[in-house]
Length: 114
Image (cartoon, rainbow, N blue to C red; front, side, top):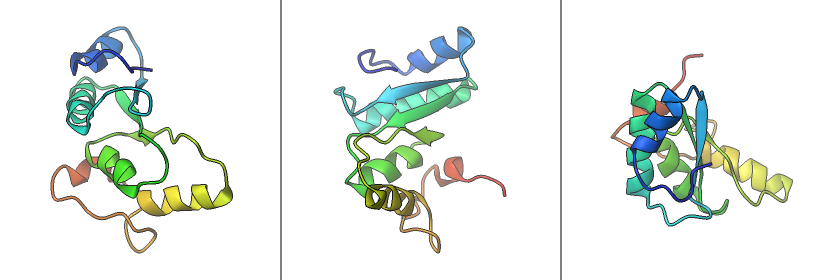
């Protein structure tokens, strides 16, 4: 899990070391969304899956912005109730299954076939 090294090349290093994925921890780090976005793009260009741990579970913007940046997964902190799970799912899915808004940039990165 990356929480201290603030360089987009970290994903490239993990890919070259043979890893399939790595975690970017925004919950316990000073990472900005801009830093995370750069890390995610570099990682995806290297063929490694970036998984982001957003700061908290309560703001839909934290989740959707991580996905909009191209994160291939989220590690959600502080899930305590069934309602928390339902909200996270709702905020990560587009209409009609959820409430996530569509970004006009990089939106295709979070779409999957099927």
